Length: 196
Image (cartoon, rainbow, N blue to C red):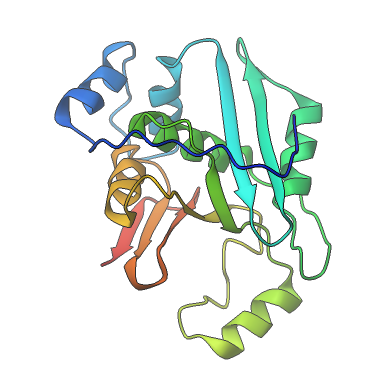
């Protein structure tokens, strides 16, 4: 993993197209159950590596790491992602659910971008979640952020709608659209979607 203070931004813009989704399906057979297996299906056609790129504006950190090679998760890379996605307010880490990394990666691949996600929120300690909940009704009491199963993300080169559609196309976990706040929530909980 490489952490630096410069952000790699992509300038290429494209919409999620039917052809792009079909291309993602072409190299794999996806089980029809609405579970996490669908995101893994998208990734099977993506080659022998899984790569996650993120930027955290709160800490100024960049991350560009390959966390899966030829069927195996890389333990040290997973540890680094866990640290990157820490609760920066409390400086606490948690073992994040790797299924969410796969969903995030699958959605990123569908959008055909090289720009890293901007991470707004990964793990939230119970203390941080309670503080945020006291300020907003949109913060769930039993948030999957507290369980290490969610991330709030944005991309400069893609609209909230495009990111949302890519997340929903994976057919795995929850995807929330927060257009007024310019981010998309992705989690590895039950398959569902919400927002405008």
